[in-house]
Every structure is written in structure tokens, then in C-alpha cells.
Length: 278
Ligand SMILES: Nc1ncnc2c1ncn2[C@@H]1O[C@H](COP(=O)(O)OP(=O)(O)OP(=O)(O)O)[C@@H](O)[C@H]1O
Ligand SMILES: [Mg+2]
Image: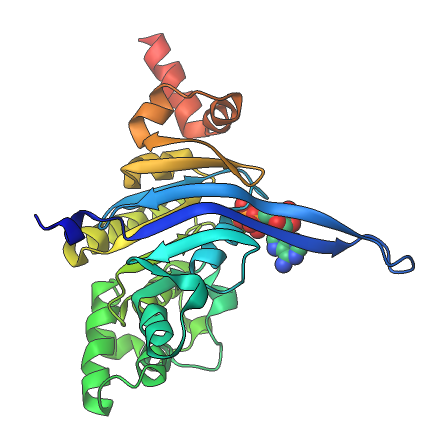
């Protein structure tokens, strides 16, 4: 194996992000909120890495910083050994192609006025990839790989004509059509019920294995992380409180916070009670 294939695809070092929030409209005072507090982590190429934490812990903020959707205050993010901070021109365009987001709520993120075909073809047009015929082929492949088949039946539909699970599959096809190296999936099933969520998890797992994509999977759900992720980092109030192989952390949590996340999972409590009863 060459050294480049072993180098991490993403290296986050000592990352800091604060927001100023206005305390009062009359007095011009503001408070500083630290959403990401000196986080360091590395994600290896091809892994399914989980970022697990309760609501408000800073998961989406970290994801948005990695996607270069917002500036940060201090620290660094390296993607494929390039500092994303200074990316410009063709390198920035390449970065925008290589890293994609699967959003939490496809109802909000999909444009209601775009058909499924236009939704999936749009990133190809933005990145000037292919002619109309080639774009159709790529959109069809992406949609069918996301489990909406035959694609031609789904192409003319609009987001409101899809079920929640189908909508998320269309959002996944849109993210995958550019053949990204790295995907941030931010609570991709929080709007779906448990059985549909499970089919989406299986799809993401297949994509990771077949297309050798690296995933950053953001969730508050340790059971989902256990199913999908080889390693996880647990985040609390903007800080990583522990990280390592998923099973090690679930079986031997080192912090009260992680223990409380485990207790909050009905499936874990249920499994523990069932194990205790036998
Ligand atoms: N644009 C913003 N302006 C001000 N504060 C923000 C902004 N975005 C996030 N925050 C704050 O940063 C903190 C972390 O928020 P973030 O959305 O990253 O949490 P999260 O872990 O994704 O939560 P959830 O599970 O609810 O999605 C919260 O206190 C939030 O209120
Ligand atoms: Mg969030």
C-alpha cells in the first residue's frame, strides 16, 4: 500500500468556532458562544466515521466547517493534505466537487420547483460536467444506485410527490452524482421512521463499500452509529470527550456523558434488560 493511500483524508486540528449572539436589542451587548471548542480529529480514507452527541453539542457546526460553508476562528482543517482555509480558484472548485452533504431534512433542502431529474442534474451543470446526454446517464445511474428505480419513472416527479424515504434517496443521489470522495451525512434519517431509517442506513453502508467513499455520519443515535461506523467521536458542548472504535466506546464508555447517551437509547436499554433476563 502506498503511503498516500494510508494518509488521512481529513485532519482537523485545534478547531475553534464561536458565534456572537445578541443578548439584547436595546443594549448593544453580545455574548460569545463556543460551538466548536478546540477539536482535533482525523478521518481515514474509506472509513465510516461517526460524530455522536446530544442536541446543541456542535455536530452540525463542525460538519459545516469541514464543508467550508462557514469560516472558523482558529485551528486548521486539511482535506487531502490541503488547508481548506486558503483554497481558491480551481482547487476550491475541486474541493466543492469532492465533498458533499446529505442533509438532515430533504423537505427543506430540495428545491420544491425542481423535478427529481433537475435536482440530480443541477450539480453536474454547476460543475460543467458532461453534455445533456451524459448528464442523463449519470443522473440515472445515481438515482438507481440510491434505490429509486426505474429512474425514468422518478425523473419527472417533484419533491412533494415523493415519500419521505424516497425524498432522502433523491437527496443522496444528488450528493453522489458528482462521485465525491467524502460525504457528510448530517442526521440523514431524523425525519424518517425507524424501518425506513434502517433501509437508508443500509444504502449508505453499501455506497461506502462499493464506491469507497469516506463518510462523516452525524447522529445523536448510538444504535445507528453502532450499525454504521467503525470509529466514533463523542461530542459534548463543542468538545470531543472520547473517541475510538465504536464497540470499544459503547461497551466501555469512559465518560458520564457517553453513558447518558447510551442510557437514552431505548434499543440499548431494551437489549441490556433482555440480556439481564436471560
Ligand atoms: N449561526 C449560528 N449563530 C449562533 N449560534 C449558533 C449558530 N449555529 C449554531 N449555533 C449554536 O451553536 C451550538 C451548536 O449548534 P449545532 O447546530 O452545531 O448543534 P447540533 O449538535 O448540530 O444540534 P442538533 O442535534 O440539534 O442538530 C448551539 O448552541 C447553537 O445554538
Ligand atoms: Mg445539527
